[in-house]
Length: 209
Image: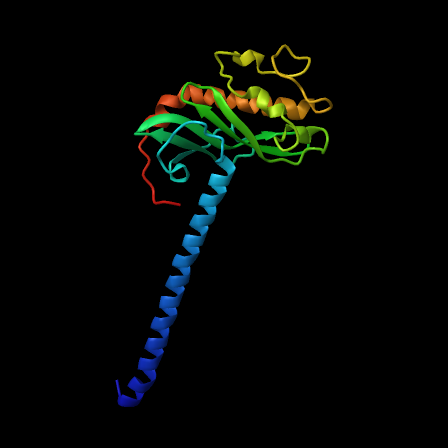
């Protein structure tokens, strides 16, 4: 390489190195922002839903399942684990997706170690205001009727609403929405009862979000 060539090449190399460093720095910064946003979303969505003591990082401790009964739209459901000193205390399924009257309804459902509903929260819905939208905890307390119940208290065949031979109240004028949420909660409890030992025993290793 001649001296004139070096005079051109070296500044180009320095510029390329600086640009590469900036790109890497921006990538790392973007990953940190995405990680923080995901953590904040999960913590906000689950706030107050896990009414048990736990000492693990919920947003990093989860499994992904693809079960048509829990995600009718083909999406992945995450099962977040609440652990205390390595012992399973409860789980939170999110999202559980069911078909409402207008469109998909996404739920977050927390279940205690002994298979009881701790909380249910609608995280996304497009149901009719004043009718199906009453499934949403922000619009009525209808959804709280499921709290504290398990399949031992109410067998699967009685997780029904309205004029059906079941236990649960129906929202007037919104039978389809009421039924969809009720059946989604039942399906989630059934999945938990069949898989709770596995859910708590599986070793989860992943990079933080």
